[in-house]
Image (cartoon, rainbow, N blue to C red; front, top):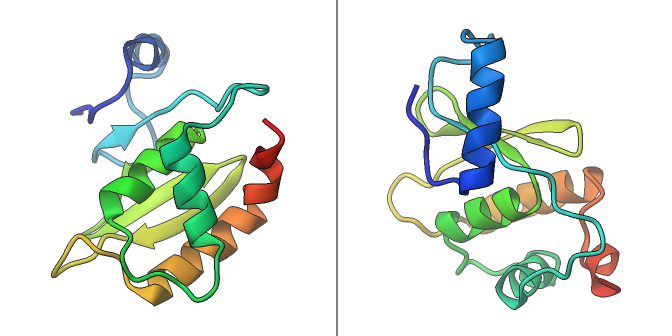
Length: 132
């Protein structure tokens, strides 16, 4: 099972989990496992700006998939590839699916709207991270 870019501490945690359970029941695809976002730690300017952009009206149509994936990993989400362009994301014990854009790396406004709803349901809003 290949790993996608993760931090060294996360890789050691993944290896330890793999030793305990070598056959994850979820998928045989790519698994990106991230550590939860440490409480009391300030969010980077890049991720804070992206989170603000996602929750701002009118919706932006200039957000790239790689930026969203980076934000989700920074927040501690587990991102797993599914069939085709589907990605299974587990964030704060909330499971949802997102689709990678097919023709470009830029997400549509509908994708951003869906992401906004899922983030809000998982308790991730700009106001939750402004005080940190």
